[in-house]
View (tube, rainbow, N blue to C red):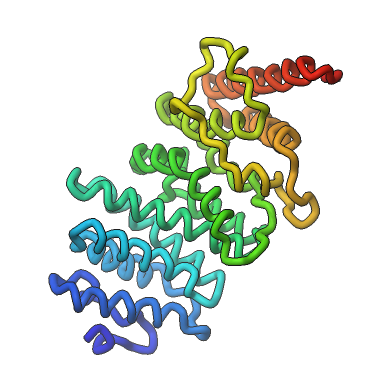
Length: 322
């Protein structure tokens, strides 16, 4: 049925995606995947992509029952990996984020959890896409711009972006990267370039005007990561150290297979070496002129605390920290 609306220029969808009939919607999603994965397909015009994503968004809106929602969320996210051209995949991903930011405030509380799940599936599929592309620098840069450009979920300047989206991303980002590295579409994935992948969060932490956004990035993402990369030293932690969860995640795939910026040249770095590289990058971002003064102070304090932890740890093992 969905194919009746197909044309050589546009996707075969329109009203079929948001149909009240589940079979019609299912057929439209399959037609969409086939349309986009055609090797001759070029990037769709921006207006066409926006229209397409409005349809997909409401197709997901109409889905009910948890198992149906989970299957559909996975099917939509997997389109990213079924598309032949990386440029088309990234443009489809940009369409997803622009639609999600645009429609987010219309989602009612009964539906919000399934959209959180859809976001999680897309974050995971995005990482698997970048793993498959061997963390190509241009692809990683484009991915970061999708997240941070105006209309993206981690744009510090765009006050129309719902803060709950940035919070959710901070909560799930490392977990999904760790999962993607553990279930990579290639047998031995190259190390994840963490410094590159965390730039959107470093920039948001430096420039957000909202204290709660800064605190969420630190507690949900930066603190657990630095803790996982460093030696565990719970007993001598200062009481002021805030733990985001009762137990800090270990991110075992990530800790064992990550680098700073250049996977092929650097190879997998040790936890302490990588932690120092990330702290240096965070310090550099904090030092930039457009960093907000209050945020700069917090980032410097976080840097100092983690550098002192490393020094204390070196001394406790009889190593000269100098």
